[in-house]
Amino acid sequence: MTRRTGAALLGAALATVALPAVAHADTLEAANNGVLPQSVAINSIWVMVAALLVIFMQAGFAFLEIGFSRAKNAGTVVAKILTNFSIAGLMYWAVGFAFAFGAGELMGTSGFFLNDYGDPQEAFAVMGLSDATIETKWLFQFSFCAVSLAIVWGTTLERIKFGVYIIYAIVFAGVIYPIASHWVFGGGWLQNNLGMQDFAGSTAVHLVGATGALAVLLQLGARRGKYGSDGRPRAIPGHSMPLFGLGVLILWLGWFGFNPGSTLGALDGRFPEVALVTMLAAGAGVLASIATAYWKTGTIDIGMSGNGAIGALVAITAPSGYVEAWTAPVIGAIAGVIVPLGVYAIDRRLDDPVGALTAHGLCGVWGTLSCGIFTSPRLAEYNAFGDGGLIYTGSFGQLGTQALGIVVVFAFVLTVSYVTFWAIKKTYGLRVTADEEEAGLDISEHGMYGYPEQFIPAPELVGYSAAPGRVPPRETPRGASTPKEVPVT
Amino acid sequence: MKKVEAYIRHEAFEPIRMDLLHLGFPSLSISEVKGSGRQKGITERYRGAELTNWLRPKVKLECVVATRDVPTIVDTILKHARTGEIGDGKVFVMPVEEAYRIRTGESGEETLQAHPEVAAEATA
Image (cartoon, rainbow over all chains, first blue to last red; front, side, top):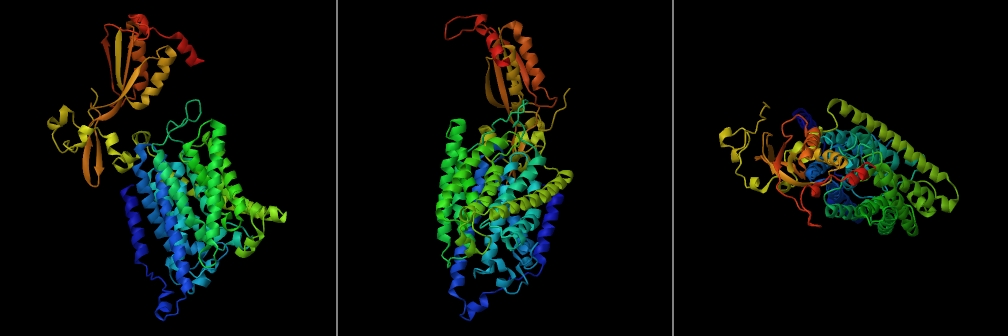
């Protein structure tokens, strides 16, 4: 990151803090007077627990990406996750939450800085079904924004400049995600006027993230060495399957906050059912993915077992609050078949190191469409959005609505993201140099290795060698020449 | 008989290996080595403190060939390993007294003979 970018960021951060932004104490007064309903506390606790589970998913994304990267690019993921998570928090507080959940068909306009919104139940009407405190709902919805942002970077590993993360994160968490998610599940036109169903965000979170991932990948290009001179893809194996597996399991655990938490409360008794549906789909997804990969390659693929879990979880995200339990294994299993086939097909042309385009993109599309097939009429009525699916009603109406929603969101996010990345490419640049890519982002972008012992010979790690330029050349260790380049004679 | 020993960049190895294979020289060994030369060190900055890393990673490529084949091998290495920047590496050629093929016990230059059938396979 350049010094100028850093100064601009600091300025922006100070400006946000300087604004008078006292959170509306909507519950404190009631509690002091002894009239705070217990339901507020109970629902808030469940949504808070769910938010913390979703926040834990950041660790899942970190380990998944680290495991699928080479060891020379492991440390940068840590810095990226922490930076992006922080930017998402500040931006979502400043403008994102207001755009996403304030009232309005195209975008919300109330609740900037969580301030001056009046009665939260009216200002954020789409979440009015729950009386959990607004700060709880904010944390929960922010954690979704952070997940969506984390998905974007799956396609960019091992070659992107660090500053790109920062610039795009501001636009994404401030504008792109809030507006797209507003349309789909924030009370916007796709949801309210057309009746699009997306319970926890197969489209609003996962497809949005994957579309951003596609937009950057199209302009970033493949890693050096990914495609041979004959144009055929080559494997660039990640350095740690155990870390990848840990990441998948953390994400899986986090999904029990992601989907069941989207009930936004505990007292309606819906959340355990949603958790059951989530688990059934993920299990079916792993098995179907392993079977499909075995059928195509003859090996039991470790990476595909994990991608299958993620793909199925993404797929069940939209229907998790709309379908009966028996449909969950069907939805998950189909996602499990999509994952390996999608990864193999995309890998021929596009270098997507973690399979984000398939797991979050294709499976997000499938999950959203599956509502149009499997949504139970009783749950459509309960959630008050859309109608029953094809198998109950015999009508393609809901399926068409789902498809329209997918196309609209995809087109919007792709356009805005593509333009944003294009502007970044023209000014700051997207990609590190070939030499930096060869050396690894850890040393070239951060000046340090994620695994020093692996890159610095043991005799040099004892710490006797001097910093460059601090000692005369004569005294450099083991008779080496000066650290400066010596001109060729 | 000569042994060619080359210290090269990692990314130079694959094209060299492919060319040598096509030319009928599939037999070689490599090692991951670290060494210092004119190329400057890398300074790692760890939480504000510095650590200079003088030894840079290189690939050491070794192969033993008949004396008449030495120019072919060396030219191939020079062709692919040269970027023109400091740090491209070095090639050493040294004499070899004797060679034995362990499987058959035979000795002499025929143990190093080029493998036309392998080259044919590689180009097929």
